[in-house]
Image (cartoon, rainbow, N blue to C red):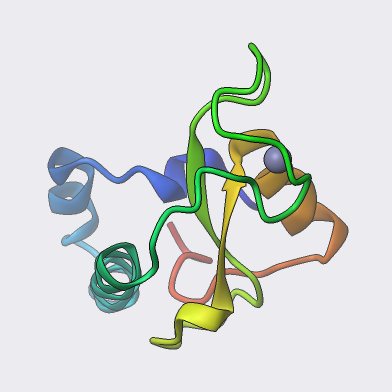
Amino acid sequence: MFSTFNLYISPKEKMRGNKSGAWKGGIAIYTTIHVWIRNHKPNPKICDICGLPEYYNEKLGKLELSNKTGKLIRDINNFQWAHHSCHFWYDKENKIVHEGLDDK
Ligand SMILES: [Zn+2]
């Protein structure tokens, strides 16, 4: 199941995850790639999914990185910037399974 928890992992939650070996490996790669993408893919301030700006309205707030395929690959083209609700919709619509996060 996709959950928004996955996108914002606090250090505290990371530590909790370290108890599980498999989860630790997955999440470490996931976090590394997300940080790398954030540093290399400029935030256009426009949602790649709906085309509306960041903080357009109450529902369409901050943009977040969305993994287009769920695959853990270090490729900026595999990511898009999207509103949280658009991101959620996209993942659901495309049945995206995020690698490394299945056994959270
Ligand atoms: Zn959007």
